[in-house]
Length: 158
Image (cartoon, rainbow, N blue to C red; front, side, top):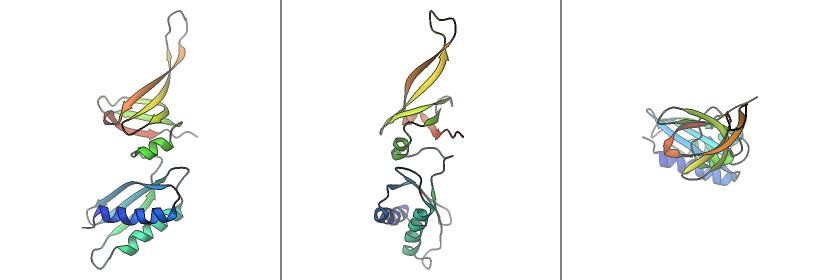
């Protein structure tokens, strides 16, 4: 079986050569040596040429005679959950949907901060305020620890 560490090393070797702010989001190796590598960039979107370059470096340095494999290198899709800190940092200021582990409750708001332990989102809700007849928009910042979260996804708006 092909080792994940070998694939990571080959991918990081090419990523360092490209020097464009690319990073690995995830590497999976399924049964039958089906290798899946997801990449992203610190700023902007990853180009197809970057995926091809990383793919070629991995493919040319693994020996198909020794062990057969299939390889797919792609960008982390917009519809996929955020999984690494660099993705959270990249998306500060964007609207995200947060699903909690304990109750499955979904909260939508603007991602305002992220670090190794938690994220913060700013949520706007209409609430009753004492002394007001109508409900008014109230903004509050909510902090979530990563261990409390099932998934965090970007909200795509057109």
